[in-house]
Image (tube, rainbow, N blue to C red; front, side):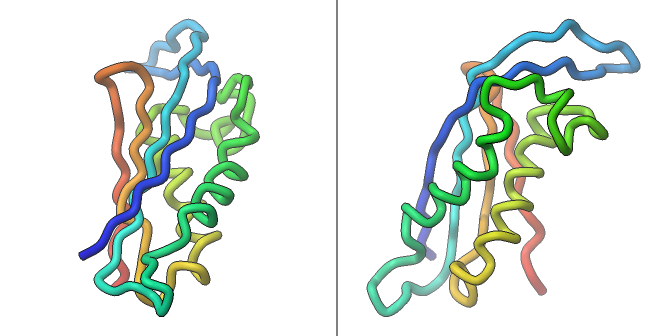
Length: 128
Protein backbone atom coordinates (compact mmCIF):
# COMPACT_ATOMS: atom_id res chain seq x y z
CA UNK A 1 0.00 0.00 0.00
CA UNK A 2 1.24 3.47 -0.90
CA UNK A 3 0.10 6.84 0.44
CA UNK A 4 0.80 10.43 -0.44
CA UNK A 5 -0.19 13.40 1.67
CA UNK A 6 -0.92 16.95 0.57
CA UNK A 7 -1.46 19.78 3.03
CA UNK A 8 -2.98 23.22 2.67
CA UNK A 9 -4.60 25.86 4.88
CA UNK A 10 -7.21 28.58 4.86
CA UNK A 11 -8.42 31.21 7.32
CA UNK A 12 -12.18 31.44 7.87
CA UNK A 13 -14.83 32.16 10.46
CA UNK A 14 -17.84 30.12 11.45
CA UNK A 15 -20.50 29.78 14.11
CA UNK A 16 -21.71 26.24 14.64
CA UNK A 17 -24.87 25.16 16.38
CA UNK A 18 -24.31 22.85 19.34
CA UNK A 19 -27.34 21.32 21.09
CA UNK A 20 -29.58 23.91 19.44
CA UNK A 21 -27.48 26.89 20.54
CA UNK A 22 -25.51 28.91 18.01
CA UNK A 23 -22.06 29.87 19.26
CA UNK A 24 -20.58 33.31 18.50
CA UNK A 25 -18.87 33.78 15.14
CA UNK A 26 -15.14 33.15 15.52
CA UNK A 27 -12.19 32.44 13.25
CA UNK A 28 -9.70 29.64 12.75
CA UNK A 29 -6.60 28.97 10.73
CA UNK A 30 -7.90 25.70 9.32
CA UNK A 31 -5.30 23.15 8.17
CA UNK A 32 -6.32 20.50 5.64
CA UNK A 33 -4.43 17.25 5.16
CA UNK A 34 -5.43 14.97 2.27
CA UNK A 35 -4.24 11.38 2.06
CA UNK A 36 -4.41 9.47 -1.23
CA UNK A 37 -3.82 5.70 -1.12
CA UNK A 38 -3.45 2.82 -3.51
CA UNK A 39 -1.88 -0.59 -3.97
CA UNK A 40 0.03 0.13 -7.17
CA UNK A 41 1.97 2.91 -8.84
CA UNK A 42 1.51 4.19 -12.37
CA UNK A 43 4.07 3.76 -15.16
CA UNK A 44 6.04 6.76 -13.83
CA UNK A 45 6.28 5.27 -10.34
CA UNK A 46 3.69 7.65 -8.91
CA UNK A 47 0.56 6.99 -6.93
CA UNK A 48 -0.65 10.42 -8.08
CA UNK A 49 1.11 13.68 -8.82
CA UNK A 50 1.29 15.85 -5.66
CA UNK A 51 0.71 18.95 -7.79
CA UNK A 52 -2.54 17.59 -9.22
CA UNK A 53 -3.98 16.96 -5.75
CA UNK A 54 -2.71 20.30 -4.43
CA UNK A 55 -4.20 22.25 -7.34
CA UNK A 56 -7.65 20.69 -6.97
CA UNK A 57 -7.56 21.09 -3.19
CA UNK A 58 -6.69 24.76 -3.68
CA UNK A 59 -9.69 25.24 -5.97
CA UNK A 60 -12.02 23.62 -3.44
CA UNK A 61 -10.91 25.68 -0.45
CA UNK A 62 -10.40 29.01 -2.28
CA UNK A 63 -14.04 30.11 -1.75
CA UNK A 64 -13.59 29.68 2.03
CA UNK A 65 -10.51 31.92 2.39
CA UNK A 66 -11.21 34.90 4.68
CA UNK A 67 -14.94 34.22 4.61
CA UNK A 68 -17.65 33.37 7.09
CA UNK A 69 -18.39 29.73 6.28
CA UNK A 70 -22.00 30.16 7.40
CA UNK A 71 -22.40 32.49 4.40
CA UNK A 72 -20.54 30.23 1.94
CA UNK A 73 -21.95 27.22 0.07
CA UNK A 74 -22.56 24.50 1.07
CA UNK A 75 -22.52 25.74 4.67
CA UNK A 76 -25.40 28.11 4.11
CA UNK A 77 -27.50 24.92 4.39
CA UNK A 78 -25.50 22.75 6.79
CA UNK A 79 -23.73 23.31 10.12
CA UNK A 80 -20.09 24.19 9.27
CA UNK A 81 -18.45 21.79 11.70
CA UNK A 82 -14.92 20.54 11.13
CA UNK A 83 -16.43 17.13 10.36
CA UNK A 84 -18.66 18.53 7.63
CA UNK A 85 -15.87 20.69 6.22
CA UNK A 86 -13.70 17.57 5.93
CA UNK A 87 -16.52 15.59 4.28
CA UNK A 88 -17.25 18.38 1.79
CA UNK A 89 -13.59 18.66 0.81
CA UNK A 90 -13.22 14.88 0.59
CA UNK A 91 -16.29 14.39 -1.58
CA UNK A 92 -15.31 17.26 -3.89
CA UNK A 93 -11.77 15.91 -4.21
CA UNK A 94 -12.99 12.41 -5.00
CA UNK A 95 -15.36 13.75 -7.67
CA UNK A 96 -12.83 16.09 -9.30
CA UNK A 97 -9.84 13.72 -9.10
CA UNK A 98 -11.64 10.54 -10.13
CA UNK A 99 -10.08 10.47 -13.58
CA UNK A 100 -6.61 11.29 -12.26
CA UNK A 101 -6.71 8.68 -9.49
CA UNK A 102 -8.56 5.79 -11.10
CA UNK A 103 -8.00 2.94 -11.31
CA UNK A 104 -5.13 2.53 -8.83
CA UNK A 105 -5.65 5.26 -6.20
CA UNK A 106 -8.39 6.90 -4.16
CA UNK A 107 -8.95 9.57 -1.50
CA UNK A 108 -8.28 7.74 1.77
CA UNK A 109 -8.85 10.57 4.26
CA UNK A 110 -9.26 14.30 4.70
CA UNK A 111 -8.26 15.76 8.04
CA UNK A 112 -9.32 19.28 9.02
CA UNK A 113 -7.49 20.77 11.98
CA UNK A 114 -9.45 23.62 13.51
CA UNK A 115 -7.05 24.43 16.34
CA UNK A 116 -3.94 22.80 17.74
CA UNK A 117 -4.93 19.37 19.01
CA UNK A 118 -8.46 19.57 17.53
CA UNK A 119 -8.99 17.79 14.22
CA UNK A 120 -11.74 15.92 12.41
CA UNK A 121 -11.04 13.18 9.84
CA UNK A 122 -13.33 12.03 7.05
CA UNK A 123 -12.74 8.74 5.27
CA UNK A 124 -14.89 8.31 2.15
CA UNK A 125 -16.57 4.95 1.69
CA UNK A 126 -14.41 2.52 -0.27
CA UNK A 127 -15.80 1.63 -3.67
CA UNK A 128 -17.31 -1.84 -3.91
